[in-house]
Amino acid sequence: MAGIHVTQVEQHPNGKLVYSVRVQSAEGRTEFPIEVQDVGTTAQNEEAVLRSMLRFAEELTESVRKRLG
Image (tube, rainbow, N blue to C red):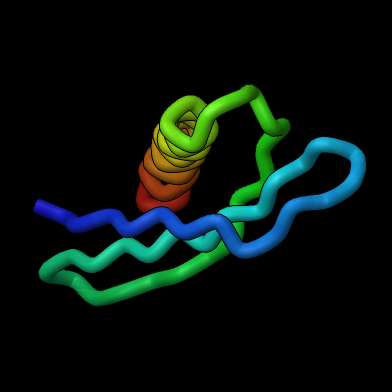
């Protein structure tokens, strides 16, 4: 199972937050930024990041499956 670490790295005046998302799995490690709208508390913002990551992972899975045939 992959481990996920979420860290806020930027806060913009327009209400956008940038998080660094680190994912470690048996296959390797990757890190990338995700930008979300500030929705209130730290917990709510991290939940928004995780939901965004889930959508990203679903799209990535679909693209990889198509590419593999």
